[in-house]
Image (cartoon, rainbow, N blue to C red):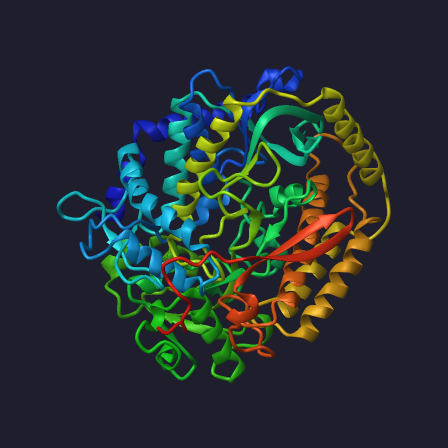
Amino acid sequence: MTRRTFLKIGATAGAAVVAGAYFHWFGDNIPATVRNGTAMYDVLIIGSGGAGMRAALEAAKEKGLKVAVMTKMVPTRSATTMAQGGINGASRVTDDKDSPEAHAFDTVKGADYLCDQDAVAYFTEQAAETLFELDYFGIAFNRQEDGRFHQRKMGGSTYARAAYSADISGHAVLHTMFEQCLKHDIDFISECQLLEIVTENGKLNGVVAIDMRSGNMLSVPAKTVIVATGGYGRAYWVRTTNPYSSTGDGIAACLNIGIPIKDPEMVQFHPTGLAVNGVLLSESSRSEGAYLLNKNGERFMANYAPQAMELGPRDLVCQSIEKEILAGRGIGEGLNAAVYLDFRHIPKERIMERLFQVYQLAKQFEGVDILEKPVPIRGTCHYSMGGIDVIDYKTCATKVPGVFAAGECSCISVHGANRLGANSLSEVLVFGKTAGAGAVQYAKNAGYEGSKEKLQAAVDRWNKKFDEVAGKNSGVSVASIRDKMAMTMWNNAGIFRTESGLQQALRDIDGLQEEYKNCFVGDASRTCNTAFMNYVEIGNLLEIAKAIVMGGIARKESRGSHSRPDFPKRDDQKFLQHTLISKEGNTFKTDYRPVVIAKYKPVERKY
């Protein structure tokens, strides 16, 4: 399928429906019942990415239940749109030797055996069905000659199992989901930022959010909440593929009601971010044949993964790039040091059909035409393997009754210490659907027991906080705190970590949390006060950054994305277990839970 054909497919009646819907969002972003305080939802989803919308679709199948999606953006602007390479599922459409079992083994091996294998088996069994479901929904997949969708092989995978839409697969997924949500008349509460999940007597009461247009605080009672707010990559603000919205809002809200963050130290750094700014060049680049070269023109992955080469797992490839730079075989200096990604041997027609966005990004940000020259790249913060502790993968429930989680904000755990390329879009759809069904079953058997007084007290508390914070006219700026956080996280809790560096990061984050208490927002207005939104987001990121660092200090081994030169070996005897960081008052504590081992016994990873 040519790119011209792909774009033509996008210009369908469905796309027109989506475009028309935007006019609705600009008219009134909140249903009248939410604005006047009379709304109560059976299932309230926080987040409008792939997981959130898929959860809403599943919940909406149950007639008689009220379902809504709350998002701090307009729908279709989540991190899901930034996923490029594809969607894994052992459908056997392109390679009939593939199977859910092979997908499971690749996932477990790629995860460096830190994932729960029962959850992985469930995930890989569902993933193939997800591809056929998307096909039925009308997604614009690239096609084979026989009309079936084509699949390509991604890093760490044995077979070609990633269906794709050129190199804008996430964008295609999210617009497809949005069309389906519109078809089923699902309520959207857009441009409302989650501030707090409110509980009463250990159970869910509802949520408090701020209407970003008016600045009004809103309370929304709910029987169930599905948290689908995405990851926390912006903790590494200066170098990440994540959008500015990836600030861990739902994770921090869950932490504050007693739900642990599981495996927060497991942060994935993608091998191929543009050297200049960390913007992602899709893994599909290497899937389609691009080479990694050092300054001497050598394909250095032969020294690190002689069989898989550039298609090794992300953690291995990223750490190999960093080793080349540290050994003096890179180009440039400091934060912008890099190696090369070379496309020149790939036919132009293939690049323009399957990697057109990669071509555009390299030209726009690095000024490089990849048809003529290799482009400088380096590792960049990409994905949060850790997240909200989900205790039942078959429902996506957490320890707080009524609260569920799915997508990148959750840790179920199917990614362990390293996520395979193209497993993220599969995960958000598989577990978005699972969470939707789980929340429905809970809501059908539960009454709404919360008190409006408890919700109103939370609203009053946030109104007071707004007046106090926004009313200040001096202090440390939010941007200053953000930049200091990002630099200490990149320098001390980045691709390689040591005890001394992690301890320095912990001191820095503790100091920044003290500064945050008296920081300066600089805007006292209520209407569209993005400065206050940034204040809330940086507060969330500081909490999560502390959890990342504490998890990194406690895990005295190297496993997957967590690489410690001072503890270079994987230690299955002590650390074949999940890290759990929880919060009691203002005190953080570390606990552990054993990893579920089933079919695949841990062995050394070799590629």
